[in-house]
Image (cartoon, rainbow, N blue to C red):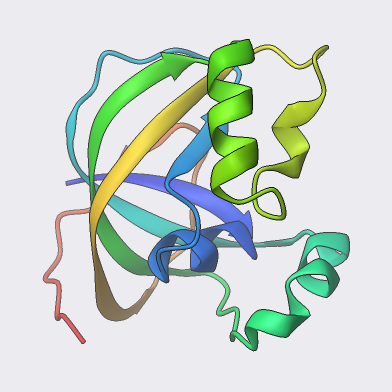
Length: 132
């Protein structure tokens, strides 16, 4: 199954349903099941910003399975939609100089952490998955 490594706290925000889009500078035609891997990197400023959510941020493990249903060009319409959905989560894409794509993630299922090193881009995991 395909996997995407994401820095914390963003990976956990996806796993807990706060974040429905993951952003990249590259486009993809891939649609389907996708595992979310919490990388070892941490955006400390963002962790502080989300302190009120009282979440834990595991690192170096696969934490959720989602269904990637779309990949959209981040334009003014998407920026406005997401700003109104959750300005705290989507603050980073409000910069009009940022150009990229949003991977639409749905049907989040949390899994028991699978500790494994991440990789850039999409990568594959062939092991077993246990749901929480």
